[in-house]
Image (tube, rainbow, N blue to C red; front, top):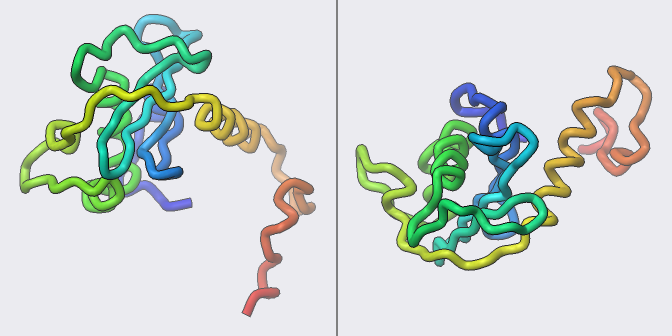
Amino acid sequence: MVPPVRPRKLAKVPFVELADGRLQGVVSSGSDIGRVYVSSIAAGTHAYNCSTNNNRPCGGLYGAPCKHLQALAAEAVLQYGLDRVARYLRVEVPEGADLIGCLDGSHEPAPAAMVFSRFLRHLAYLEVPDTTMPIPELHWFPAPGTVG
């Protein structure tokens, strides 16, 4: 886990990661509190996708990244820093430029289920009560002082 470069507002973009060759995450709907979008931008090609967690396409994809993708990119920059995100996506971002404006990809469907599943797993760990006992599903992490 990388500490955020700057504090983030988790209500709008509760989950953001650089994984599987994509900037990807979960973005809350601006109009329906019960709906979230899984948004992603591929490294290198900058192909982007945004759909609900049950794979319904975002209505805001009109030949350019929608507001969910813009929010995802902005929060990724807060979380990881512009240099790291730009390097991961393999894009040049000139001084003072906006990351999303420097991307040259187009809409390309991408699977949402795996990202949404990781988000749900992430949420489940937030509900684990404080304990000093081992958590069975995390048993593969080395105990402090055993690696060296």
